[in-house]
Amino acid sequence: MPREDSSSGKAIVSSGLGNSMAATATTGRLPFPMLTRTNYAAWAIRMKYILRTNGAWGAVDPEKASGGVEQSKDELALAIISQSIDDETLLRVAEKETAADVWAAL
Image (cartoon, rainbow, N blue to C red; front, side, top):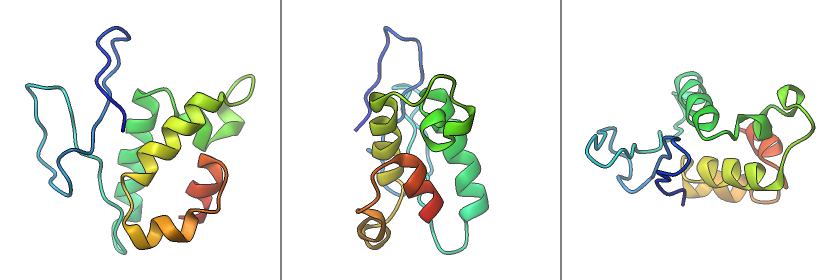
């Protein structure tokens, strides 16, 4: 699970609040949005912002990543995405090797 990193100045998100959409401003942590059967468009936009904030969007959209995708960024993107989907969906995409493959399957 990504943690708050005050040294990088980036806003790291946490899924510690479950499905709640409330933000905890005092800790700087936000819940991951959960993908449902009816909210893909809004979920994808929110996830793009979260992944971009954490420097991991290039793992989902490798064509825009200059110089290829770092393994650590791909793993971060996979971790963030896995926290925003339910168990059934997670099991459906578990065989995918990269964040881009998981995103495409969703």
